Image (cartoon, rainbow, N blue to C red; front, side, top):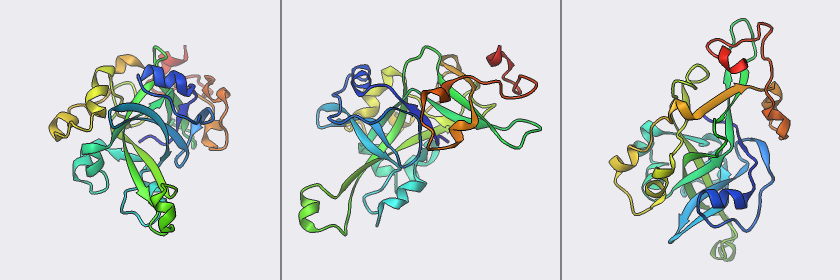
Length: 248
């Protein structure tokens, strides 16, 4: 799964990287993005690729209220085509959720608390999480407000799949990270063949991933500072099972 990630890059930098139009409003940089926060999303609007803030937690158009999104921060790649909440978006509302990196928690023998690990690209470039987005309109809002677009919520979910060899010792799942040569196909709403789409939902190569232990301060969703990325010594032995080289 993916329950926390880092989004600290400026929106104009994100827009240049993804060859998209920048958003009108900027979000505050966050080194600890949590579910229900607003996040940057890259999607196609007509013929234009845009970066736009959206609510993290997928709210289907048929939902009675937005709280259903709290349970839909992630979508499993293996069941997208069979879930009524996600299948329509899989064919016409695919997106990329940019991230500087993400966190996962690793069980450590002899310790009750899990050790948070920061996972990122080894070359420092952004991660391109495969995602889906949705448009929800509040059915209880006054008609005039709905017609003016004031009762509309844009939301998204991060697609997860099997972990690669580098991440598997920490967690058995990870976000699907799209390579640059897959962006055009993934974002194009005219591409609706599920077999073609499904071939893109594979684990990222272990060779592009680096990870290291960070402070348990990341456990607190209110802590958002850059110090969360500082490497720490997680155990008295100075090593994590299967991860010793990362601490050298």
